[in-house]
Image (tube, rainbow, N blue to C red):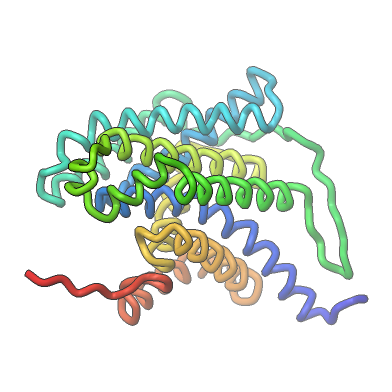
Amino acid sequence: MELNSFAQQLVQQLINGVSLGSIYSLIALGYTMVYGIIRLINFAHGDIYMLGAYVGFFCTSILGLSFFPALLAAMAVAAVTGIVIERLAYRPLRHAPKIAVLITAIGVSLLLEYGGILAVTPQPRTFPAVFPARIYTFGGIVVNSQQIVILAVALALMVLLTYIVQRTKIGRAMRAVSYDTDAARLMGINVDQVISFTFGIGSGLAAAAGVLVGIYYNSIDPLMGIMPGLKAFVAAVLGGIGIIPGAMLGGVIMGVVEALVSGFISSTFRDAAAFAILIAILLFKPSGLLGKNIREKV
């Protein structure tokens, strides 16, 4: 059954938005997990996404690996990098003023960006086609194989993360540290190990998003993590920073809004729409869509 032109375009933009939103969700999960554990906004997280894209690129173009081995390699390298960054840059400042940690996060971000430019040059690279692109049409709605793969991989990783957090020993430790770090330490939990694991798993998810974006847009560059990183941060705030389902929801909403603005208004305003959402959520519901306002006695 054919849809009328407006409904067809609307459904098409929703599909595009969900695909894009699933990528934002993967990046936002890293922000929200780290914030939930140690109340830190890791502004270098978007550049870990860039690192994952380049590792995937070199694995496929030079080593000749197929999609899934390249994806796993990118996630592994990014996870180790995230752990090293936490150990060297953030752990020594764990009890320092928040402004010192914030400046350090910005410094790490700039180090990764311009270190990437020095290592691989600022020239954009064309991501190789790791699987054949196929087009499927359903009632006038066009879906390509890249969108299907992006959605499938993102959903699988979100389900895996949910299982780890809810059903495993390390997941219970993460929830305990998030709730009360000192009490968790008194109960015998290795807090440093839990924090490192959180950085590692969040960085791995961001790297997966980087590889998926490389496949979808066929182009990567050393500064590619700046805007998606900021938008993923907005997604985390929108859903409720520190809340894992909130990051997933916020990412999807961000992707859908961006696709609708691009499709029905102008692609020029899609970035502005993201930050308009941030301003609105901070004004009217600063705890996020799934967050709760908590009063603390002082």
